[in-house]
Amino acid sequence: MASVPPTSFPKDQIKILLLENIHPGAHALFAAEGFQVEALSTALKEKDLVEKIRDVHVIGIRSKTQLRELPIQEAKRLLTIGAFCIGTNQIDLDCANKRGVPVFNAPFSNTRSVAELILAEVIALSRQLGDRSRECHTGVWKKLASGSYEVRGKTLGVIGYGHIGSQIGVIAEMIGMNVIFYDRVTKLPMGNNRPVPSLGELLAHSDFVTLHVPETPQTKNMIGVDELSMMKKGSFLLNASRGTVVVIPALADAIRRGHLAGAAVDVYPEEPEANGEGFKSELQGLPNVLLTPHIGGSTIEAQESIGREVATSLIRFINTGTTTGAVNFPHVDLPPAIGRETHRILNVHKNQPGVLRDINKIVSDKNANIEAQVLATDPNIGYLVMDIGSDVSEDVKQGIASIPASIKTRILY
Image 1 (cartoon, rainbow, N blue to C red):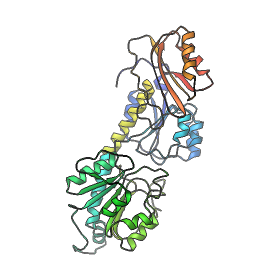
Image 2: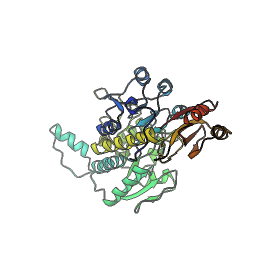
Image 3: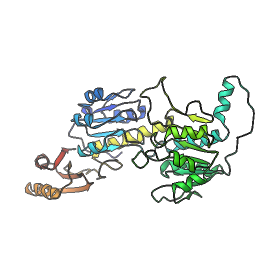
Image 4: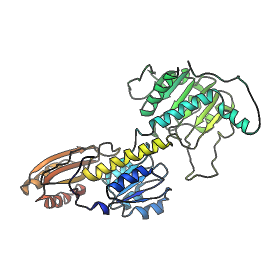
């Protein structure tokens, strides 16, 4: 990481709260910067979260913590949020955006782990390994070949051809499978993977269907009774994306009727908040159904990589104001002004006409020299990063902060 001038706010006073057993590698990166780090092993209920987050500058969470409007509004010192996972549905992104708080996640780090789990489950389903293993554990010896197949030559249908879906396609092809995929956005095929024009065509031609889509209004219940009926008799469904994507009662019925030969499910519409007993699903006890507790990305390698990826993004934002990779914020990456007598001003403002004009007038009235300036916008806000002479930086900062459209203004260094 490039060195930066000393920050105006002491690093040893920046408070970072990490929840849900975030990998120690992230702790080490924050500690190396001199930040205060508090780590908890669990998620927090909203009432406890509101109290805990009041004086925190950075919060890091995984999938269980619900970071909604109330805690974000109450966190008066909050600078940025880290989602140490892929999904960000647990965070009120719009509220954070309007409060001037960028949110960073880890879109790449657990890709391989999820891909390997899916391919392992494809093979396990084709050989009914879950049932055979359970029988042996209970003392039943059931050696048979009926209903067991090689996956070589079979067709894998990938719904959602993003980072995970495309890697699954590559690995599946390496073990001799044919791969087709469907995505609402045009994607470049990897290897011999082949796109199909509709979801229905994918369902009708696939021996295995695996889902890798985000949770959106468009994907909610996208696999229900009608879609399951389109699938080949004797095919398999795998879901390691989001629990709301598949209608579970419809899937259970398709397996009971023998239309599907099995399924592997890692995510559920409702999931327990903590480890322990009490998990219920209509899929429990059904033949050739693999149920796992949302562990698609739960490997040592993935968690270490996620910790490093998100922590690095958060540190870059704290040190330089860089928002590249933020999921809810305009992207700005202005290199540090090394060796010059400048201070960096960060300003988040409502995206409305005339704001940059007003800011530049303030700079002009102070006879200040702008060394560098970058502005990026989204429909709600504008984000300005400006390097300016250190002799007038405080006056300029105060002037910019007084503009009615300003949301958050600070001198970074």
